[in-house]
Length: 186
Image 1 (cartoon, one colour):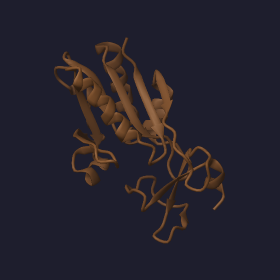
Image 2 (image 1 turned 90 degrees about the vertical axis):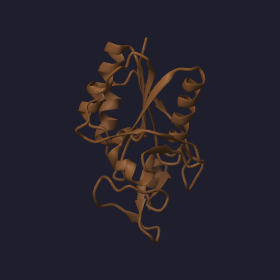
Image 3 (image 1 turned 30 degrees about the vertical axis):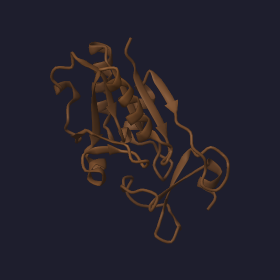
């Protein structure tokens, strides 16, 4: 029986690496997969899902108007993978749920749960509500040995930024993964 999975964590936890490894396992067994990446994340990755350790795979780039129900010939597909799933819409998550429930195809979504203000992303909120399995990928706080559960935005001088748009694409130059204690204490 197929399931909708949500693998979530903060940044630098290995979400994309995990996605690419599981995708490799499917392909190694001669199964076909589809990989998707929201357009907003595509700009920095040039149409590929990339991990910080050098793994990468080509992905279908989707925008807010993309309709997962429009995918043709899912008959030979064993699994659908979505990286940066926090950027999906609620509509996307419902469409992915239909792929699981109607087509009996596993869907594995990987993403960040909350933004730098501690608020849920729309895609993450929908996945937390609808996913069959919710799996945390763990990493450690930048400042202590506790589990990192939050993301802080920082400026060029390392100062914590508390205002701004929810989405600002960047890496370690803009964000740091921290525990709740360090999220609230500068």
